[in-house]
Length: 122
Image (cartoon, rainbow, N blue to C red; front, top):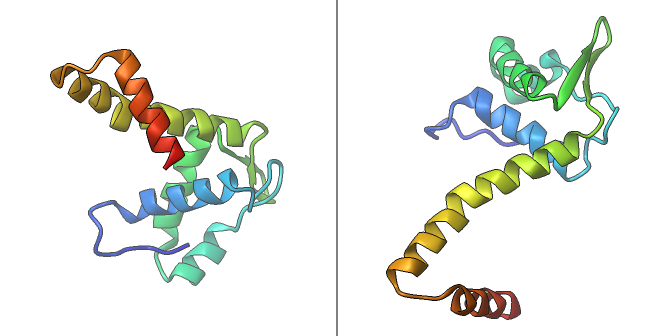
């Protein structure tokens, strides 16, 4: 996991995103333990409270859960939750603006679909 201290994105959000990426690509399978707050804070050379804030965000989203005295684990169904979250974000960030611009350009839904097909082919 790489942190960008020059980024406008808070470090705790970068930590949450890094763990989320690891879960999504299968580096941390469901029901397996993720690195501890201490391990991450030492490896990333940051305050443990910052790491905990990022981890707690994933707990709130149901992606991680805590086993008292053992550590944090990946929740059952976490990959699917992440996929749904990212699909929603993709829709809001890309599809909604794309359709809005297509309408401004007078493109029909059929023409837009053909352009998307062309994009997949290239």
